[in-house]
Image (cartoon, rainbow, N blue to C red; front, side, top):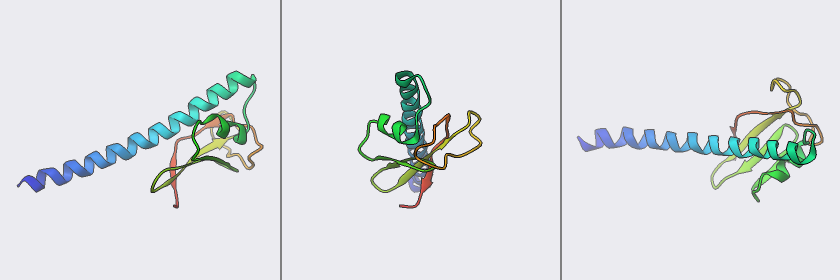
Length: 106
């Protein structure tokens, strides 16, 4: 009977942990965007935005910021319009909006 209660709780806890990790990664990139804007009085490029995310496991890609973790790689998409409709196409494009994190293949 205990396993019937413990297994669903474990799965729920794992899902909560995954959700928290995604929120943390997105939040860090969005905070870096605000800092980069404040420091430069302009919109940062994808490359400059990546440099503001204080982490050795971060890199700029044409359409966003890649964050590597132990067993997964996450992508935080960036956009060149303020409505988050049009993805950046180059690491030299300015970032006017930062999206929410999603998985990439490891």
